[in-house]
Image (cartoon, rainbow, N blue to C red; front, side):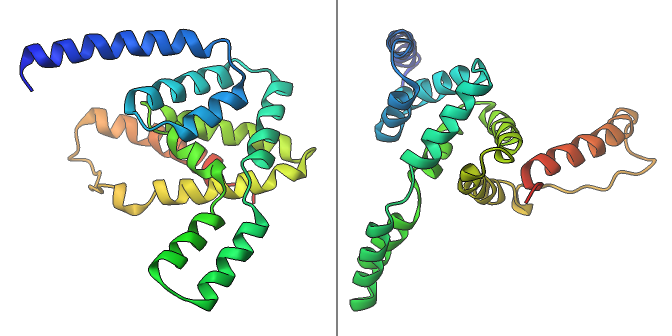
Length: 198
């Protein structure tokens, strides 16, 4: 794409994002979740995800609780659909019947989290979201399946393949040595929030 073509594309994209952002302000959070799950465009999906994360950040405790209740119970698997898909696979094992079974077993809330994670900085906000969830599960144990999904997704996102390990010793630059002790503390806290509590 030429420089001019890229410039025009960026202008239209920003105008579309602004119009979409203004439109979503009047819609319910559950409607936005459904829209994000059904969106196919990169721009619309990113704009919806950003708006949902911003809206969540502004929620009070009761609103967050209602959000978690919606995500846990309304974006759940369909047990009858899982059983039906399993029976179809048992009767005729094939690529298509296995795919149908795998899809039936995955709650829609996992896909919602994946789509929320497509915007810059989203992973940290989802970690914070899980922290909020852990604080509520003591009084609302029905939210526990959502935490299973968070742990499953985080385990697939944070694995050793993402790491580049290099030794830190006295020959390392001073700023690296200075940051390493802070980084250790930060990593302990982050790993605790991601994989801790159950």
